[in-house]
Amino acid sequence: MRSFLFHMLICLFTPALASAAADDEQRLFEVVAELDQGPGNITVTPTGDIIVSLHQFFDQAVRVARIGDRGSLTEFAADAQLDSVLGLQADTNGVVWLLDNAMRGSGKRRLVGWHAGEDRATADIDLSAVSVQGSFLNDLAVDATTQTAYVADPATGDDAALIVIDLASGAARRVLQGHISVTPAGTDLIIDGVPVRIRKDDGSVFRPRVGVNPIALDSAGEWLYYGPMHGFTMYRIRTTDLRDASLTMTELGERVERWAGRPISDGISIDDAGNLYLGDLARNAIGVIGPDRRYRQLGTDPRLSWVDAFSFGPDGHLYAVANQLHRTAVLNGGVNATQPPYLVIRLRPLATGTTGR
Image (cartoon, rainbow, N blue to C red):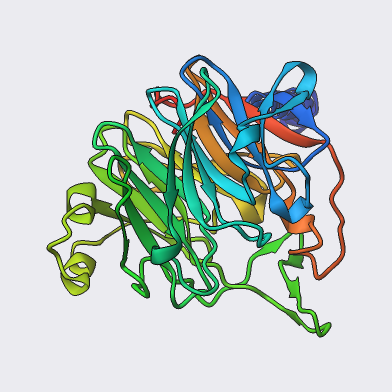
C-alpha cells in the first residue's frame, strides 16, 4: 500500500516539479529584441540606448546600429567610415568606443570614440603601429576614469596580445604577446555535436584555436580579467601594472594571476560584487564565476546559441546577444546554417554593474 501511495505521489508531483523547473529556466532571461541581422557585441549607454555591432561574419552593409522598437535597427556613427567593428563599449560619459579591426580591408585598424547623444566623433586613434600581420582586434574594456582602453588581439594564436591605449594622448603599447594568458589551448570547440571549423580557399578545413578574446574590467577599474577564447582559465592583472610602461614584458608577465577555471567563452562582464558572467558556448548556457572563484551555470536554453557579449544597462539588467556565430559559413566549414532571428536578451544579475561594461 505504501509503495502504491508513493508511486501515486510521484506521478502527481513530477509534472509540477518539471513545470517549475522549466519556469525557472525561462525566467533566466527575457528576449528584448529579435533581429534579422546578426549582432556582434553589445553595449548600453547611460541614457539606455542599446548599441550593437553587426558581425562581419554575416557580411552586412551596416557596421554598428542602435536598436529601436521591435528590433528595428538605425545606423550608428554613420559618418565614421568604419570598415569592420566587433568590439564596442560605452563609457560613463556617453561616448561609445568602436574598435575597427579593418578586416574587410578598406581602412586601417583604429579605435573611434563616438558620442551617442551628440552624434559626433570624439577620438580617432590609429592602431596600425601596435598591430601585427593577422591582427584581429576583437574586444575591449574602457576605463573613463584613467582614460585607458584595453584591447584583446587574438591575432593568429601564438602572437596574441593585449593592447593598452592612452585615450587622452592616443599612445598605445602592445603587451604580453605570446604569454600563456593570451595564447589558445589545444582544444576544440564543439557545439550541438558539431566542431567549429573554418574552410580555407583551397577547400581544406581546419579547427581554429582563438587567443585572447574575453576581456573585462572590475567595477573599480583595479583588475583586468581576460583569457583566450580556446582555453579553460580566466586570468587577471592589475591595471596599474598594465599602465606602467617601465615594466619589461617579463616583469609584466610575472604580475599575471591565474584567477579561476572556466569553460570556453567569448564576451564577459563583471558586476559590483565581483561576479563574472560569461557565455558557456559549448552548452548553450550562461554561467558565472563568483568571488569564491568557482564556476557555476546559471541556466541553459537552445536559444542561447553563442552568447557573444554582455553589457550592464542603467535599468539594472545585464544585456547580451545570442548570434549563432558557430553556424555562420565562416565557422561552419563554409556552410551557412544560421536561422534568424538573432536575439538580444537581458537577465537580472546577482548584483548591479557599471553601465556600458
